[in-house]
Length: 205
Image 1: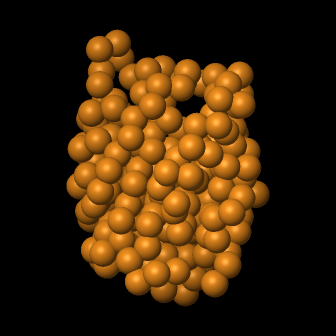
Image 2 (image 1 turned 90 degrees about the vertical axis):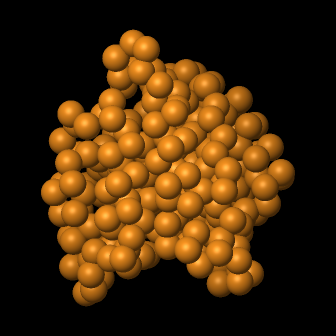
Image 3 (image 1 turned 180 degrees about the horizontal axis):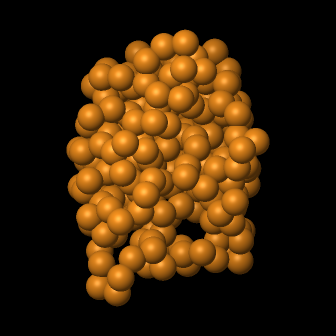
């Protein structure tokens, strides 16, 4: 990987990226990485009518250091129905951005959209040397990280980014104490401070 890698982070909905790998992105951005975030739906089923979740995601991801943020409009909660189009779009992004590392969603997730993103990613990024799957509040117990990123210095910035999602603050997993608890648990597994945990779909050094 180059000194200043090209990082692609993908989320099915606004706030997925921030929850799953927000601290890691902030750490990479501080080190000079070129970060492109891709949000695949506007999250219309997850908020009151008239809420602009795309704007919330844009503000949050820029705060974390994303150089560019692309907002698409795949049908929220119906990704499996458009799996071919989803894979094609991700292949186009892979060809245009040529990422060194991809952060994407896990197969071990009860949300059908999240699993569809993983399946599309496994095809679209088959030539990318590093593909890391992050956890979400809907991850299944069988999600087992084997890569840990120390985000002790980035945790407060991650929490600030999550607060940008004003429409989602009623959800328990957005509570700062909950986010800290998850980070502390992953850190305990790794024997260090607060961490984000990832399952390596592909890891080439």
